[in-house]
Image 1: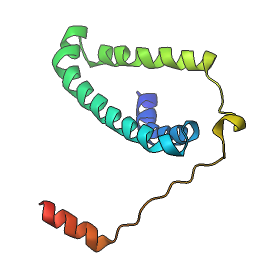
Image 2: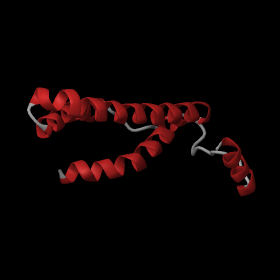
Image 3: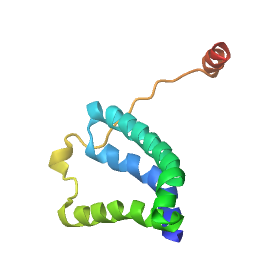
Image 4: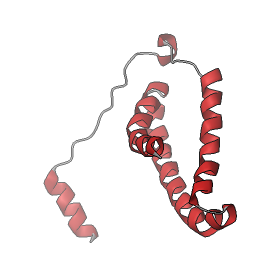
Length: 116
């Protein structure tokens, strides 16, 4: 359980860095958006189906965690034997420069006030 908690806390910080290394400027925004949407949908589906279907079917929450962990372990071994480091020739120009538009706090407050 300790490793599960450790990786649950570390994964949201690690995954965007890996995504930035593997996708270029044009596809980085789309891949991050897709990652966030699917992460949220997966969390929602896991929460709904775990308590209502999987826990009674598998005989408790411990067995459910084993079933949820099996694909991650299989994908981990697959990555271990077939994965590779991102080479300098594949990444193109080097580090990714992300431009974030600036938003004034009063504009944000006005938008939030109007929507509520």
